[in-house]
Image (cartoon, rainbow, N blue to C red; front, side, top):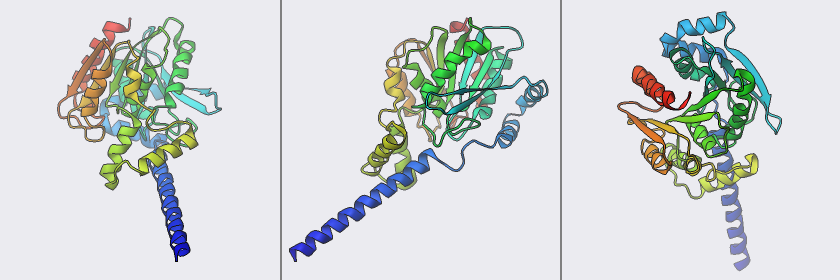
Length: 315
């Protein structure tokens, strides 16, 4: 009887363990390999034209004059990485490095490209992050591994725009988290400031919130297992992938933007981030804006905020 009970408990433990590990793999694929990732370039261009009609003449001009150019570099692990770039209408050293969000790609950041290139007369560089656009990779890296790739694009920028460039790094959503993660690293002196628009505090915090809302589950044990599997698969875990930790080390200026109706990356996160960041810093809460819609909702005010901020630091 005792032997049967021990065997039954052992089988139950094995079944539970296998179920949790299987659930962890499912959650990892669900989070880092979603089906709706930004790979279809023509669809992305059509989306941008319909969502932001004021871009159409500029996009036509870029395409007709072959002014939106491609460039490729290789990461140390052999991943082939892609970016678009365009020069300003007039020679300038002012440059914006623009980072896209989750399931997006560089094309879907061309509204911010327009802001800098057309409204502010900046050069622009728009990388595709891993598993997005024309960049290789087998999973999203949620900004953490991407921070190293963006640092490589930052090092590449002078070879495109000239050694005297002065630059801002501007990201939205996952791209904003990436921007903040970059800001905590050692960056070249020509990176003058950062703009983060609706970025999350950490991958752990964001996935914990999504796990609760989408599946009604607590963090323990599934999120812990999934984070461990991410460490095993990708070399990083959800807890270390923290914008909140990184910005504590950033002493360059940063503009924080967040919509007050954002329920995807909750607005409360920006207050935590802003409080953690040393001066200089600015905060703009956009009334009525949902996730990643601040520019769409308040185009003129958004442009003015960016102009006033970059005029102060990018010279």
